[in-house]
Image (cartoon, rainbow, N blue to C red; front, side):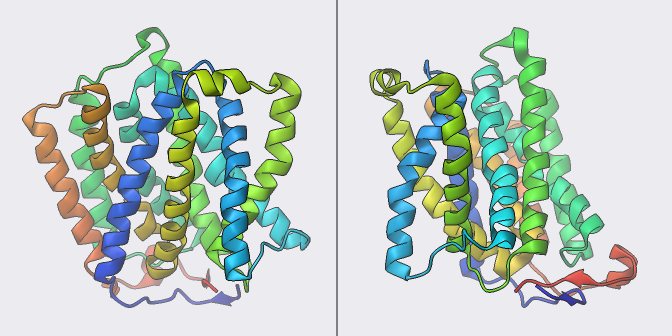
Length: 323
């Protein structure tokens, strides 16, 4: 990437909006799967290690079909893969696996859906995206609409005595994702595409996380089979492949703030999946908040033309341009 002024993207297309909705639904389902996985006897780090191993054939096959491979032996790319994997995959996955069984899938989804707010703040500081009134108002409106759900809804908390610990772990997830969105936007290696990045993250994760986990915890094959965890891991792998493609497609089309809006969609999806899988219930005003969130997402994505001077919003200076 080269230094440039803040870029002006064309209006968001219908396909991008549909992709955003599907990505948010995928993320919402991840939270329910994390709760299922966390309730097994297998340690969260072991679950992460087995998932990484299981992803190797899938991403390897994709590389072979496309004829493009991650640049694992280029130092700059290796550092990028490592940092991206830590911020966007390793730390959030561990935090979600630990916190979901404690505070429940519904509350975890609500906390993680604060990611767009964090993303906007970091984008302002790192100058990674173009800000306008529609985006800012849309994100703030959706965040305000979440407050009644966050503070007024009596969500089921599986382990109330550890709720404060679980909530602290959950709060760290949107911080990681917010940095991740902007890190990718600012430092994406020139000449590489999303699949190369995703494969690189997975490969670096296998080389660093898996040996460490097996060294400290050993191989827990029996619990994986006995608890049916392998079924959840299959879901992880399929959803991971779909969400990775959508993530980089949407990041390129709309920037880090746009793709982070999938966090609001994941709130709606998470509430729904929590009802389906765990019997969680919600009063009528929760659904009113959901409607406001949907309107706020429309506001934030319905226009890309700046209605304020970028220098007033981001201060004077240059920003990084996507490759």
